[in-house]
Length: 115
Image 1 (cartoon, rainbow, N blue to C red):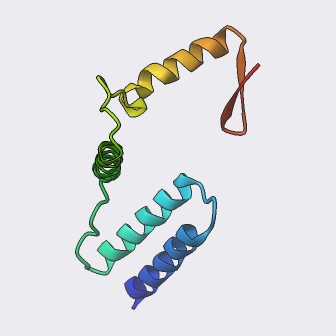
Image 2 (tube, one colour):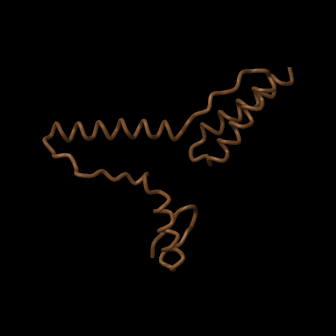
Image 3 (spheres, rainbow, N blue to C red):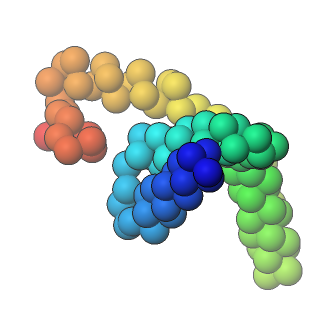
């Protein structure tokens, strides 16, 4: 009965975290961790893990293909090269860090602002 109560409490915590607008990712991860532990304590099979990177790549590939199909239908020539910002995130982060070190931008409330 204790494991069942623990599972119910964890499920309620997860539901609250997922239904709250603007909830920090750390709270969602903590709720998932608590829910997984409670499920294990109740001898339930492990919860499936969401592979966010794979889901993201699948979604963006589908949207990109639809975009290029629409452009083709409109008679727009395809680009010679396609550059995806997601392929360069580490370089972008380093570039912004260099700008910040040089005093041309600042961080506030989790965002970067340029002077």
